[in-house]
Image (cartoon, rainbow, N blue to C red):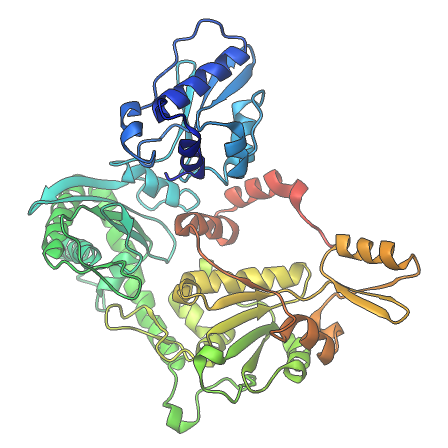
Length: 545
């Protein structure tokens, strides 16, 4: 866990004082301030190593809490409380633990859990050897298929290998890979070895137990990864990284090491847990059947040759430029807003694609339903995105992507927010490379137009409206825009579309695991986590009633 607090703290330390002594002193100071005179302070785990590092992997203690009557007193051992505040954490030494956690759970390192040992509470994140907990965290908002995490921690061919995996009832694959604790977002040979070991072992088990005899479709490697959540971690002495961002492992010797380790551990698990094994194989069969049903639907979105002049959706108003780096695609809701946007755009580099209503919630849908959906098909065709790469036949292929700015432009109301959320779910689940490459944006149309005489100003917040009124008087006329269709083409151009005036929000993935949990919670099948989230955050909702 790399914390800004630690880095800033080390610069403030006297030369003769160690980081360990500083943190230990802060704990003692906080305890005494809370009324404890005689204290035997628990040591931090691996405290002696803090002086030898930047406090990263070794600082697994965020705060300690001692019970005092019916209250809990937090001892913040990350240092000066101001440092904690600078990190965006809300703190109060008199807060009960539950309220402290509720106030900070979205900002503390992930995953976050509270452990009670006697009177001392510890908040921690998974450390080395704790991939099992990490997988449980990732899948905490999904319905588990086997109610277990398959875990291995071994060494093959001189390469330490640790893997944790499980299956859930969704249709998405979630695999995170690491080399020497570096997140290899582009995968590599360790991921190849994991997939080979998983596929060959599960397929052999199914064949040996005659589970595939009545299956009328071919089983592909992709079918074994539907609903899979896994973390793969290896240690390599001399890693060779390649790819665009140098986060793809290229060491070929790692393939066999990971494949062997995964095959052995998974084979043992399947033999010892026949019920879970059958459940996994049954899901694989269903995935294969769905894949065949989706094949014809998927073919529909493949773009025809550019020379043929066909293949684009009829409602797309394309731009004249063919330089993807300069081109923008505005995805708008409805024909009314689409018509206004078409009139306000710059035809040279701005294209408009109106959508009819709300697109399918891909979080709950299988492949054949997704590729049968007309609006989703139109999105693929308009962007010139196809399915299948050299490495993965199910991966999206951006080699012919026509726009390097894809802008979601919806109404500033509840329906507009829902449509934007559905679209972001689609991009996160089905076109994540668009986000990872920095191509996805949200437009921010104004909510108000304030006018007093010849003075006119567009406002995005209520505070801006009040400031305009204070400056220009109470006779100000305030127009509330309920939708993009209420704006003229000139207004939409000047406030939301023209590069020299507009404000765009770039969509980025800072924490893929946390983003996965949030999409599963808000858009998935399980209602209880969503209800709990709404009840906990109802007071923060901005309702346009």
